[in-house]
Length: 445
Image (cartoon, rainbow, N blue to C red):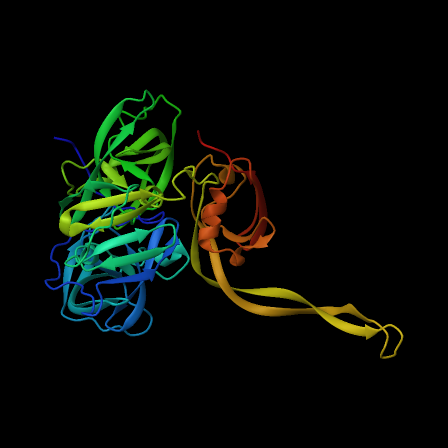
């Protein structure tokens, strides 16, 4: 029997919750609808959707890798929750369990889909702030509770989700689609893939399908893929778990195949065992596939039939990139800046109506703005940014001549994973003093 562990990665953060109890009713569409389509945001390979809880509009991650619906604290303004009771939850990381509140009989809406009897788990740990990691408000995670009640089509190309009533759903013919059997354990879907190591030896693995993972692939057993003597990996911060930070190794796999579809030079991460202690996992599980893998397909999940269908999209051949800067940034509140603007005046050259008008600068005014504050939350040792002198806690002011607050956090992630050889110049503050770092993005392999 395999020694397997359970984890869920979210952005550069991830969450694993060991709770019990599911809603007894479920989500339904209005009787006038057999299907409904809506848009989602794709941020660092993660799906963000609008969710209403007891008539309060929020933003959630849609995550196939979690069983229970989770709410991270409460919004600044009021949100009524019903039937509260205190419970303990345990997740990934080097700490212990944390306290949560279990709330039952809640009204939850995802556009036209409604559940009038939803169970929520509310976690108040301030370190579990996904909003800082993604640059937009993230209030919770929705998973099995939603997927079990519909056939869910995720079009990663158009950023559209279509949900179908499984009782009336009719499968369309699709020559380029490939269908796979799903196995479920504790409300989580698993599928078999083939992976190939450096010697191109093939191994069949059972992986959790985890749309809440920003990475492509995670494996628990590194023995067949990397060794301490090899140079085909590097150690890195992998994310923030429910019980603390997660560290591990990152490497590449020569090939990963799902059915007839093969992807080459695929990113893979191996979490350290310390972060996985005391977590109960599906015994047959070897790891997870996440958003950087899934986004290369348009996917249909049919939990009622234990099936998943995939079709290659335009992103299929995109190369797999790592963060080559070594920097992990987060949105740490807001800061005040002065934005300079030139004031332009007009002057007539000949003091008559027919003469031309010349614009001349007459001064500078400043707009006082409240803008996002980006700081370094993690930095990889011996990375280009670390060798350039940057440290954890540095506040980012300017990147490549552009004020930091003019970037979305997702843009910065894209910048640091863009291409080897790209020059990066960062102006940053530390202890009230301003510094400049210059470095070049460098491939790790």
